Image (cartoon, rainbow, N blue to C red; front, side):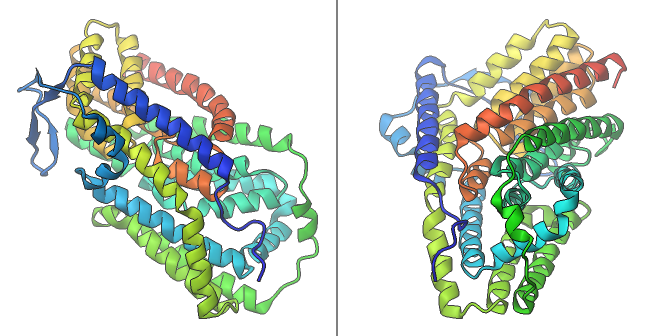
Length: 465
């Protein structure tokens, strides 16, 4: 069977461009270890068993630096570093997605689904766009889903191309929307929930301004995506879907795929109300996606041998993304092992002293934006930053609620722009879109959104939020 043109594969140019960008960032980070003195904050364990900065013990200087061989091997050494379990889970998640999608493509199910959806929704495609953007934003904002939406990115992107748009539109509708919802943080347990708990505030209190932020960001994002989509030439995929012919076997496979994957999404939604599920949502989605893909392809008529062959072929096609993820993760490893992460944080906190309240709020926003480049995990940043910035803000009359909102904004939006975020690299690899192309497209939204969220923070300060 010939391989469909839309099967998953990472373009050589996209891969090389991403590798070069990440390597330059790795080199820049290593250079910092020569100019920033080593230092560390004392740590303590809170009542919940989380390791946080001990503000009473304070900061002290320590020997820093990192041997060259360690930096050179850092993309592999990171697998043995503290917290590497999450990195391994992301890589396994990626390989499952690559294998399943290749099987779905080779059995013809993805193309059939595309034609069916385009045939059904072509007349209301902009209404569908608005609904999808709202769905993904809600997933990010209400239950903290970001990594879990990655399997849906190629599906939405394929649909977007079929509806006459392009891959950039598809990534924006899905992953960018999820990132925006994650940052708005209406009830995000991984940023707002953790940060408010550390600050001693009732969980999810102060929701009204986050709801206002959600609505404003949704409208801005939707207008941005629509403006780009309306200026694209219509593709041949739309006309092709006019001749869609129903196939009972394909319909059966598609139904099974939707039902099983839908169960995985329902489990993610339940995690918003069942805290015990939150640590396992990525694993659950990966397992559900694997089961859905295997079941659907077999039901659609692909034999077991063909399924195994196409699955392995998908693993090979997506494998280069693993190197990109390891290289991106090594940047934080270099900062931690070189003992300069805490030093950089201490410099920032020291610089904040004596600032006017409005400037301080925006400075906290900026600190979170910068730190998110090195530490994509929202909850990890919360344990690092909140014990420092909330007391600091309080000294100058800035409320804990506003401080946490600035933290959430700084954590979330840049997840879908920084090349150090593994989910962004995975998603772009799955739809064969180069990072440079995505950055050129999305930076316009990021700048507009930066102005919007800055205004929201200043508004919150003015009304005493």
